[in-house]
Each structure stands twice: as C-alpha cells, then as structure tokens.
Amino acid sequence: MPVTVKRLDHINIQTRDMAGTIAFYHDLLGLEARVAPERDPSLRQWLYDSGDRAIIHLNLFGTDNTIPREVVPGDPTGAIHHVAFECEGYDDMIERLTARGLNYATNEVKPISLRQIFVADPNNVLLELNFRST
Image (tube, rainbow, N blue to C red; front, side, top):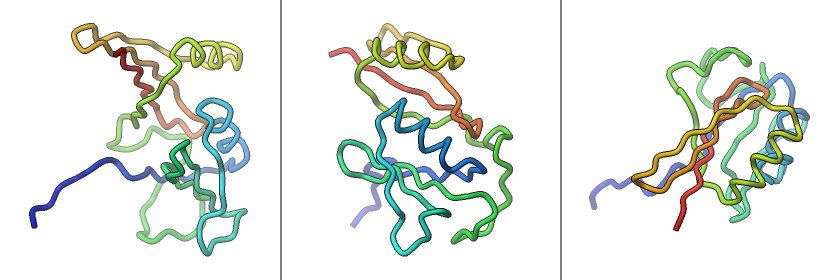
C-alpha cells in the first residue's frame, strides 16, 4: 500500500503559561481544552476543534516529552514559520482580534478566493487563519 498523507494531525506547543494559552485558543478559535490521556492536567492539555479532534497538544515548559528537543517558549518557532488553520467567520474573527487588542495582519489571494489573517499566540507561534469563499 502506498504511503499517503491525509491531513495535518496536530501541533505541539510548549508553554510557560498554560492558562493563558488555553484562554487564547478558546476565546479566539473556540477550541476546547481537555486533559491529555494518562497525563497530569496541570502539565498537559489537548485542545479540540469542533469536529472533536485534538489539533493542539499543549505541554507545560520543562516537562518531559516523548522526543527530547530544546525549545524556548516566546522565541520564534524555529524552522516552522507558521501554522495554518482553515476557518469560517472572517468578520467575526476580525472583531475578536480587535476587541482583544491583538496585533494581526491580513492578506488576500484573489485568484483562489482566499482571505488570510496572521496573529501570534501567547508563545509567539504565528497562526495563519484561512477563510475561503465558495
């Protein structure tokens, strides 16, 4: 059977501010935090989308990881420039960002009817929020 990539499964973010990061993703994107399987909830939370998929694994900085790797929360995210999410509700997102006083940038790719919003999370992970017109 050939190997195929079906979709991005999740991203893992190391944070020094578990509560603030959970609040950011909940308030902005509506993600729901749940305890990671077999983990201490103060150290690990998984953030679920509306389709009941854990798309962000959130770990408290300094806790063990499956694969040890140096990370520095707050610094740019290494070789990863940004993480993109397909979204709906462009105008509502602009209102949420403005109401929270968050810095963001927008972009439009007209040939493919795509509007984008770029915003950094509390850990300096750059998010690309994509809104496609039908």
